[in-house]
Length: 316
Ligand SMILES: Nc1nc2c(ncn2[C@@H]2O[C@H](COP(=O)(O)OP(=O)(O)OP(=O)(O)O)[C@@H](O)[C@H]2O)c(=O)[nH]1
Ligand SMILES: [Mg+2]
Image 1 (cartoon, rainbow, N blue to C red):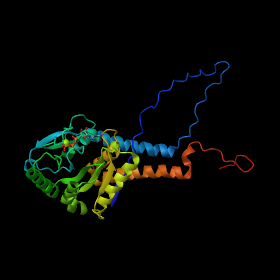
Image 2: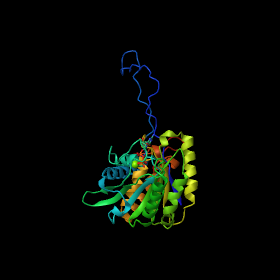
Image 3: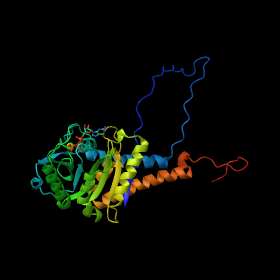
Image 4: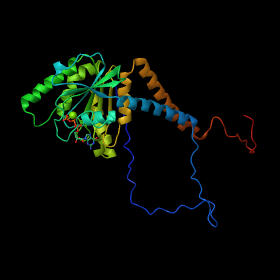
């Protein structure tokens, strides 16, 4: 089944047209009423606890992603060191934003080499994540495909290399495919999907598609981009497959929290990942229930008095 990770475009930080600041009225000044504090809805302890649980899980994932550090580089596939660590491959067309996404997720400026010049990443670069003494995941930044300036034979050779890597790399546990949200899946993107499709369909390799540079689209276009990608990915769906898709922007940080949560969960032992997912789900459900039952205003430690029809307080 495909699961989409909806992401909200970040609220604009543009303060809008400048207004002359209104002078504050000093409280209790003669002849002027004291300014009232704005009325706020009372906080629900259920929703607050749910929000806190979500924040804790998110913080854990961001801290983990920040641990990314350079491990090694290889000019060719056969030079990649054999590894037992779960490996996540970042793939996509040249210039799709792979290296920038790695830097953004890791909250580091120059971990991976990003550039305006397409074809910048020429080597296979590996990064380790997790505790220094005991890394728990590898991120692989792969050279992009479809770089126009590369001659045809070099392109074909690269496709063969990618096909081999995606089909045979033993410790490959997931593919993060970067697709420019403005263009959707191109023919080359689909070709690459085909290379890994058998292992995605049987659940051996997870697939997460990031629709990059989402900051360049408005909300309607983002929704269309998401729908288009979901339709393509539906072709790969099986009961075993774990496929996700999310809007992503390194520029305004759209999707960063969700994506680091997903990557982090892949590094955890199954029981721990399930426990975290269950906690996040329970938090979301508690918050939704609080909304549905109108529990938002009820402080469980100090319940409001119950009034009878005549207005008299009733024993609880
Ligand atoms: N507007 C916008 N530009 C982005 C974003 N992410 C990356 N870019 C720009 O896209 C260009 C390419 O980014 P890279 O991260 O180098 O792309 P790549 O996929 O690693 O490219 P190759 O190494 O050639 O395969 C750079 O100029 C980035 O600044 C984004 O989220 N929004
Ligand atoms: Mg790159």
